[in-house]
Length: 226
Image (tube, rainbow, N blue to C red; front, side, top):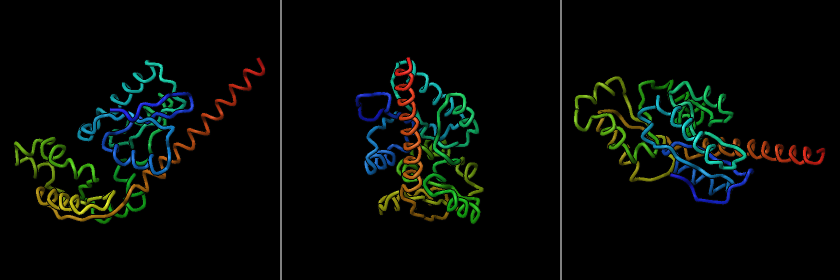
């Protein structure tokens, strides 16, 4: 899955991103006029298999570079996501990723997430995306639909579901409460919006733009000297 097809040049930016961020990334880019960015999404189902994320990113990076796409900068729209390998991959491939351990910290911000986690370590966090796809990713993805006994094996040590909400949507709130009931947990909601994603994406975009401009200027000077 890719974003809108546009003419690519060396000052364009590509983000290889988690499919679970598609809605929020599109919103942030549209709101801030980040029209020099193209996005290619990897399957959101990797959320359940984080050990596969580094290989999937590396494969997509190599495919992008092999097809000769002329991007000035390639960014990784993932946090560490429990892989512990993404920083090593980014260093090897010369790319930069979104900061933070996971999308929960990205949306909530490090300070708020730390306070929430310290207050109740036994928390299952759900973003809007995970609420929308709770049945497919959690109940079916973890085999609970077919084997209900797995519910307590996975979530027996949890005490609450905390919905980190990106939008105000009563229908989503009801689905989040239903998700908590399915798991036999209490429910809590905290509105985060997309501020964390927005500020970090804008920061990455600014650095990438400056780097691209510096590279272009360096090339001009090299041509003049030659």
